[in-house]
Image (spheres, rainbow, N blue to C red):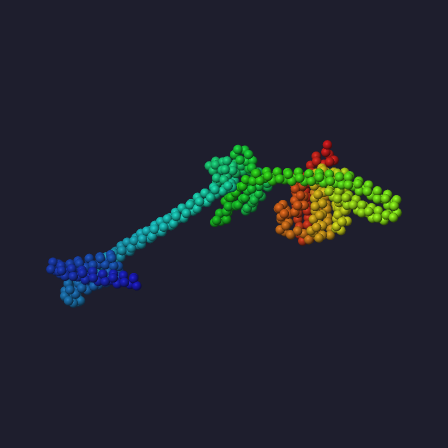
Amino acid sequence: MRTLKKEAIRYALAALAAIAALALRYLLDPLLGDKNPYHTLWLAIVFTAWYCGIGPSILASAIGLMGLKYWFLPPYHSFGTSNAKEVFGMLGFLVFSGVIVGLGESTRRHIQRRQQAEDGLREAQKELEDRVTERTAELEQRTAEVVEKATLLDLANDAIFIRRGGSIITYWNQGAERLYGWSMEEARGKSTYELLKTEFPIPLHEIESKQTWEGELRHSKRDGNQIIVASRWTRLQNDKDGKAVGWLEINTDITARKRAEDAARSLSGRILNLQDEERRRIARELHDSLGQYLTALKLNLSMFGATNGSQARLATECSDILDKCLVETRTISHLLHPPLLDEVGFGSAAKWYVEGFAQRSGIQVNLDLDAKLGRLASEVEIGLFRAVQEALTNVHRHSGGTSVEIRLKSDGENIFLEIVDNGCGIAPERLSGLNRGDIGAGVGIAGMRERVRDLNGTVEIQSSPTGTRVMVAIPVPEGRRLGVRS
């Protein structure tokens, strides 16, 4: 609708220009007479060709030519022609008008295209300025967010740093400065492994093959002191292509906690050793003192029954009771600390205990001992015996199994004890707690684990609905075997 209105205005301007040119010719007629009748029309043709376009220019040429013929060329007030000169004059007017219109249209279109190009450039410039303004605001916002996050990271007590290219430090928060002693300017651009002299618990390539990793590392501070940190690694990836670009590492100083744990573990091992010593003393007193008194009482009752026939039956009953007391006292004494353990070693003590356990519980136990295995260090034999004792106690109380396999073997450097039952197994949640050593996982298992750990060994428990497997591994250097000890 707007285009149609513009077209009508252009045609109206062309018609008005032609009429104005004719009116001007009329006013100049006393000066010009019959000569130069087309002078004023050229103004109308140039105006319409420049501002109105081809169509309006043609309309102005037609109106001007018809008005000129009708009013200013003889015969006046008629469209007829009197001679060939007037005809050629009108044809010449039309030809030159066409040339002027063509040149004007070409110039007008050139100006229009240039105007459109300038308008397009202005719009593009405005759009570019808007985009630059928007991008600048976005970058300022992100910069403010990064600064805020960096400030928050600096408030953290943990050491937080970002590594690019494997180990090169690009960010180092104030927590890292406080923990290690190097400022950000000193640490940036250096390798963390070389700066902190990192000691890894597993090969580095295994850690870097994962997306995340948690574990303990040993680092050296600026003053040369070594610390232990709980380290959490997270791989950083590019948002566009997902390519790994570095690592975020968060370290917490646990040196004091590890020292406390070591002290507690040492204390626990000392308590267990004292417990074994106390068991040995009580067992010896039961055997040497109470056992002798009961034996003497039995002899006296035997003599009393032989001399007094009327009370022989009562004396016999008392003697039977004393026999049971002697058996129970001997059993308790041996369970507290089997004398065979000190006298002939773990193999004989284990056979004695397994046979007694099978008789008392009705559970079949198969004991397979390495025939080449000789005497071991006293603390190793006690640790192995207590492990067997605790495992069989748990089988009897909790597993509901009917048979147990016990195997003991050595590879020359380590002793391997394996206890397998066919019971109902352990629930996954409780099994995880047992392997982690959680509080409440059981006093017996905890004692077994502490004994073995005190010997630099390990305890692993596996379980399924078809049974449970307890595996104990204890390193035994040659110098610690009884057969070669001085």
